[in-house]
Length: 110
Image (cartoon, rainbow, N blue to C red):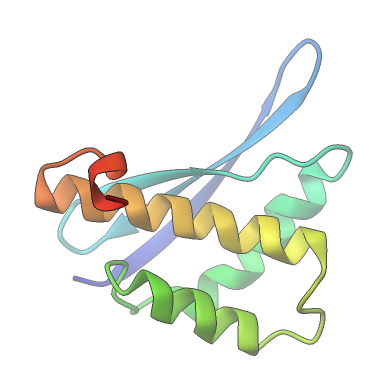
């Protein structure tokens, strides 16, 4: 299984805007993640779009590998925006893993 695309959605709401992502795979499984951080919603969408090229072709079930690979490749490792973007991708990958195994994500955590 490989990641084929990441789609970002900026949802404008009354009191706050939300950033959601969908991580798509070649197996047709789609995971959903969330990356809302005010007031940087548009920046977050751009950052996730930049990360997209680095995770296309990777196995979304190798969650720890993806996180470490992306985190170590960053200049600003402790930057809040970087961590939120990576977390959104990680959340979506956990969603994919749960769907593939047929269990809710909380069961994957023990």
